[in-house]
Length: 106
Image 1: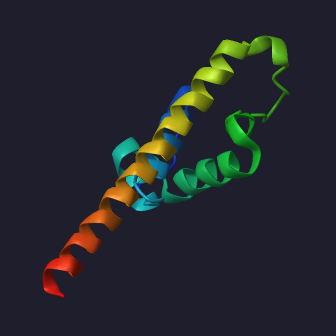
Image 2 (image 1 turned 30 degrees about the vertical axis):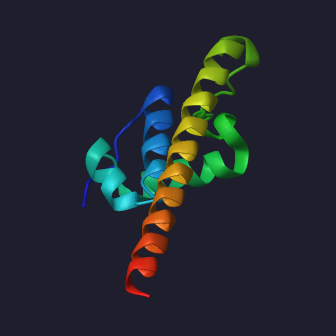
């Protein structure tokens, strides 16, 4: 089991993007990014509940809106939406393959 480590905001965005694109496989995500299973899961759950703002580390002090530009927030959100789109496309492709196999057999 990998011990948790400190991560930056950008790393958390990458972790969530990868996890969503790989069907919420927290173990694989944790291994790839060398974080704990719980960190990978928490980051993904926080994103799904609060969006990109949920990935901010608010311990110690609250980060003001001015510290993170609108462009940075939109880039992070865009990256995660691309991962969700990729996941949906993979799912559609998979379902098409299943339909094709069923047609051949039946």
